[in-house]
Length: 490
Ligand code: AMP
Image 1 (cartoon, rainbow, N blue to C red):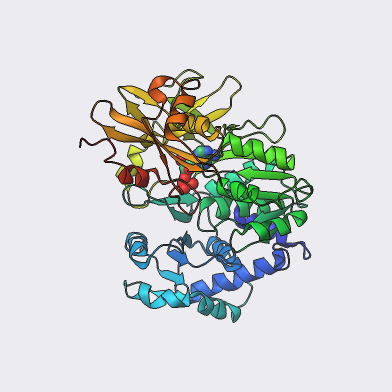
Image 2 (spheres, rainbow, N blue to C red):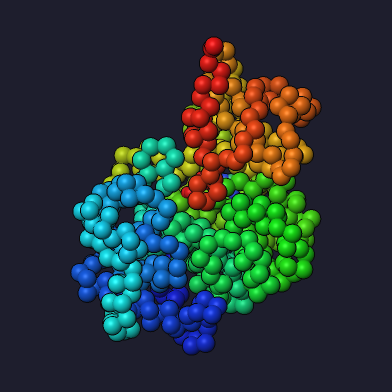
């Protein structure tokens, strides 16, 4: 069994000088703040197992509140502040939080949906009047720590129930794997409503006793200014492409850094290579999802292979299965399934949906992938994004990697579009690099040397940008909808 997050927090807080946030709280200060907040939650009538919905712009208090909920046994439910009031209604009716905490400007809107609502500054003011001593209840590894809603590009978003052990086991595995120590300073520029910034980044720091430089948003210039004081950065691929677009990204600017980590969306091998050429650092790519926490990682020592997400974390098992559910031999592409202490407890109030996504105790991720002979996993895309054209399977990731390699291509997304002859046709959506012009026919001809004919896009569309969510993930369902009529007769 792993060390619980709060047990770890208390160990770290025993050293009065240990810094949690550079220029901000110490761990001792953080522990005191979580005590005041936990007392405030109890004074508001919240009890173990109740949900607390938090929808605010990124700030330090989100992390304090996350830890205060863990102390009180209240289930932490952070929501993207970018969601509209109408979108937020689903989380309120589905999760039935005992309290929703939001920005002052949104209190009336959420109250109008029938929720009990409080503005964050009011909660912090209430906490300021509370004692720091808090009588922590005895909570077990299987107790719920948080519910995170999936981004839900298709269908309703589902509440992912994460236990304390899910979070603790993953934090311990990552700290060891990525060699986190108390001398680390993490540059934190990720959102804190998502597993990446909330659990991966925050818990790696907390479990190692390191510090973080906390940015309220990702601004390339601000990140570059702070890199000389940091040792580790975690980012989504768009962080890396946007930093590469800044001439301030140099070998000198990153000389003090120990590690750059990427995840949440595929990092193109072209970006990996460009980053290495500019800075001398090989970005370490890892793979995970809300339901499973982190699953695989490239090695800290040893080759970090671009275009792969590395090997399963210690304690985590990964297998690849075919359409009939049989485990496939190494090298073959199929469905990625995961088992281990990292895997969630199920979807909130959806036992049937949960059962559908598990096979003999293995969670079916919905991603397709294959292991190479050295044990590195490659992600080939979401199963529902697989293109079946004339009866042949085309994995978008393979075509995208080939396109990203072409001069003048800044980003690509490959989708399947209904086609009268082929059922589905492969279509590429490309964004040109600054100043570059892309020619559809020339690209298709160039691809003939690199891809089998059935994988070559029937159409290459040049777009100003790709639709992405807050984590930089390309929204393929949106692209499919926008271009559904491409091959319609007439
Ligand atoms: P989320 O639950 O929002 O974190 O989304 C999880 C999904 O993001 C996974 O199922 C993958 O499809 C995708 N993903 C995460 N990390 C990677 C990665 N390194 N490469 C490719 N896809 C990734």
